[in-house]
Each structure stands twice: as structure tokens, then as C-alpha cells.
Length: 125
Image 1 (cartoon, helix red, strand yellow):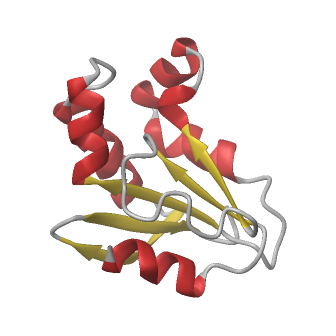
Image 2: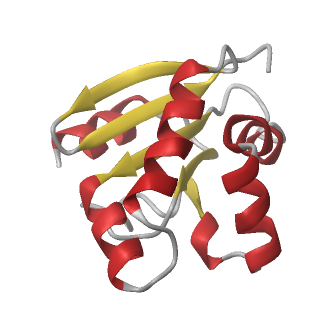
């Protein structure tokens, strides 16, 4: 909850939250001012594209956000459990996505705790 609350406390209006799915605390919080994109709801071809080259594809998908709004990537334990339970992506695939985002210069770590990670797309991306 603290991780997601930190996101909403700092996200400017019209920001975008990108997550695997909606299985995280406060997922519908502030829906009137922050957009959400749950990539596992996408066409399977696009999900496969994300799995193949996560940071590049996610950065491209997130780049349309107009400043001062920001684009955030959120991945939590709950999303991983939900994805595995529903046969979408397994833990290894989601870990690969997280690691790709973590190592990309296009993303900056905002917060991390035992519940998940939060990154923001850097403005130059």
C-alpha cells in the first residue's frame, strides 16, 4: 500500500501507471486524474513483444505522456501472483521485465519495498 500511495502522492495529473494487471492496492485510486494501462489485458502479440524486449517496448508505449504528467511502471507481488494464477506470465517472465526496466537508462527507480517496485520513465526517453 505504501508503494502505491507514494506513486499517487507524487504523480502529476494526467500521469500514466503501467502495470502487469490491476492486482495491487489502490488500483482504482484517483482514476479521475491518473490513467492506467494493464499490459496483460492487451493482445497476446503485444504482451509477447513486451516479454521479448521489455524496457524498449514499455518505454515506447509510455512515451506519449505529455509533461508535466509522468509515466510510471509498477510491478508488485500481487500482480505476479495474479498473472501466474491466471496462466498469463510466470514469475521468471515478470522478473525479466522488472530486471530489464531496472537496467534501462530510460527508467529511474522511484521506490522499492518488499511488496514491489516503482519506476518512472525519464523525461529524455
